[in-house]
Length: 197
Image (cartoon, rainbow, N blue to C red; front, side, top):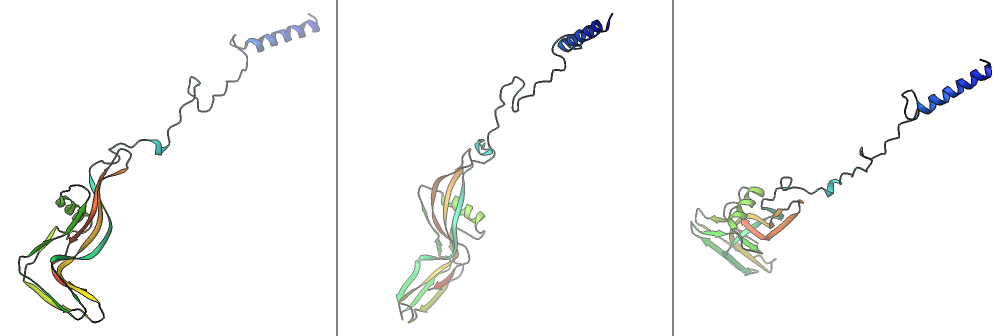
């Protein structure tokens, strides 16, 4: 076999090898097609996971049990309206109360409410000494003259306590606070005493 024929056979064999490949089928040295980014095995796009804000919360994540929220809580004197007297400058005011006298705090609300439930929530959240009512354990009395520097003044039986705004509601599945009732309250907390201003 001459040199020209040898070169032709070699070239033909190499061409066949490249066309068929060592396994006998398919293209030789063919690169695997790159996998498409964000594609499933069937070539379809994989849906993106929703953003965290789009995922609905379950009641387990945000308990729907009814509860209270309190706002604008302030220490204040809670007076007994039946034992409060007023007078002008220079007038001497006096107040007295017998042992066992009881008075209550005040409430406002948008819908019917069990006041004891509100008081219990305030006691747990704001102060353990908050109560619905106070009762004098001794006879109390006192007097005070409205000073000349004041146009008028008052003297009253009462106790220090708290005033606040409140809301009753619950959270829905999306953790949104839904108000079912609201109002204000002024509740006694400490022992009864007499104050003036």
